[in-house]
Image (cartoon, rainbow, N blue to C red):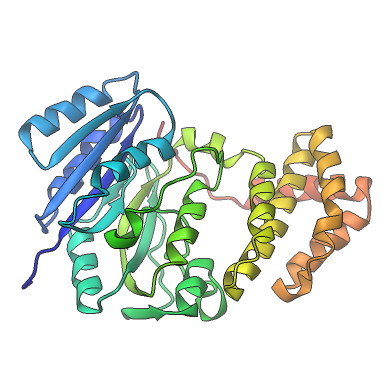
Length: 340
């Protein structure tokens, strides 16, 4: 590789002592060496900070920052504040401290983004538990440039990118970002859920070109502790999406995605309300139905139109529906052997 642009990896850390060494080893053993690592200890109460200090003493590329426990958004923002005026950094990546990246994670991104002069790159993700790992199925097997609407369609799994496989994950870590854009953005620390999506949407609004890389170079660890966040009612997320919609973004794909996401968030809230018998959320879903019914659900597929029909059939039918779905899922779901 003729040029060797500098890459900043931002690593928020909170109580991941069991997995942190494996994560750090995967970063420092990259076959690409022009890397600076900002590891932010978010007030860990285990041995995580000691591990970070040990690694930073051995490797000058690792910079350890520390803050009182303020959440992952604040931790990432602290690192972004540190690199904002560093003109030597060309690309930025975010890695979670309990995950792993392949040896060529950085070099592959740098090669493709540099050769195509792209602002952004995305690769596939493999999820793994204590015993199994997900398939590395990818719909497209060749590197592809993303321009204009393609960037949004790929991220939102629309058009030809529907059912694209393991690149469909909409979290932040399986991506590379141009520092010229990302250094001027910040995560919203007030969001309880969806902070990654909010950040990426703001980035994509400014990105001109991207690259799809048909390799699964990011490995996502399935942990039992992550389930609590997955089970959070998306009510707050729906309210945030409503606010975004009021801003009337010019990009049609983004606007349609927000409408689709409002439908998903409303349905998720309804599901949570009936599976947990949450009376307050049931009332909220009822009150929000006036917003939901204004969205033409049919343009997003029969599934969405069917959901509105189920709701119109009334309380008894909704209860029965979610009970049947729960039983079906329990019978069909593959057992996952979560890490702690």
